[in-house]
Image (tube, rainbow, N blue to C red; front, top):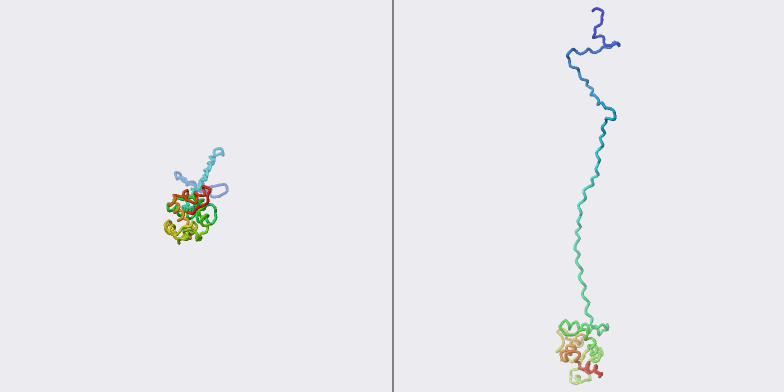
Amino acid sequence: MAGSASPLAMASTGGEAVPPAPAAGAAPVADATPALPVLGPPSTWIVTTPATVLDIPAAPEAAVTETVAAETPAAAPAPAPEVFDTTGDELAGWINEAIRVMRAQGVPVDGGDVQAIRTIIDKESSGNPQAVNRWDSNWRAGHPSKGLMQCIDSTFNAHKLPGYDDIFNPVHNIIAGVRYTISRYGGFDGHPGLKSMLKGSGYRGY
């Protein structure tokens, strides 16, 4: 109609052009802007509690087995030598050694014989290992008595122990004198000088 505006041109009162309405039967064009989620009132909100963080201890380290070297037991100290004569003087040392040697060789002598041995030595030589008798019958016969227990050479040689060959060595002389006493008199109880003293008489040489 002349002079009348087209319906398409009548968009708004502002005079701006309004896009034409879609044709009948055409599908609506989707809005490219994503729709925001619609939250209901706070009473309908579901709050998820965060999972508890577990404190898991680290795995224990494998125990380190310390190898301790077995200690070698210390060697036991050598036993102290037996002491038969406890007097502690020089003569005691000689007697102790002589008894040890004789016992090792099976001679029946021990600490109970110490006093008898000391008495014989005292009476025969006054404890002098170099003593030589120059006045008795043995001297006159040409074989003087010698040493601590005053053995003549033949008696000493018959009763010494192998390796103990010095008549003037105090230990060697004691060994021969004791073995002679045991061999001839059966022991110190039969020694003539000791028997005489037990009866109240003076010492007698053997």
